[in-house]
Amino acid sequence: MARRREYLTIPRMLPPKPPSRWARRGKVLAGWGFLVLGVAGIFLPFLQGFLFLAVGLYILRDEYAWAQRMIDWMRRKFPRYTKQMDEGKDRAQEWLTRWRRRFRRTVYQVRR
Image 1 (cartoon, rainbow, N blue to C red):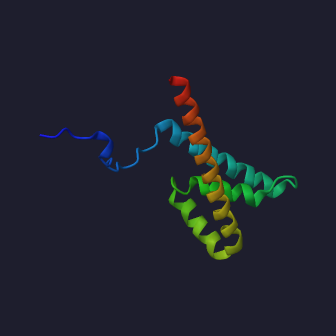
Image 2: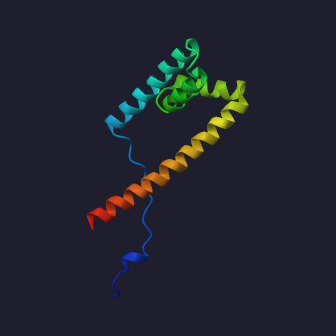
Image 3: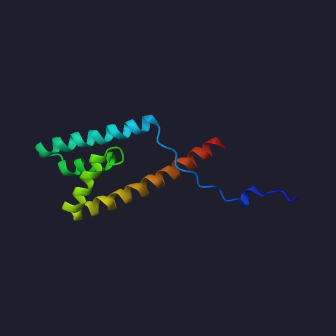
């Protein structure tokens, strides 16, 4: 009987782990913080109110159904701006992925 080669096996795709309680709370807190800054930005001339509102809604859209409905309304009402937000989200995701890889490499090198 041949010995099984571990390096040739294909790992099974596991479902993603749900975020921890603290990660979820931090996400909700950040989303509400951006919404508060957005409302303040409506009245204060030096803050970009719409930008902060949009970012807050994008953060909260996975947690609250009303935030997703607002995002859908914004997509219908302001298609050009939501396209820019989607491009910005993609760029931010690429940046975050790059930094996670760098961090993991650094941690791996330190542990050796």
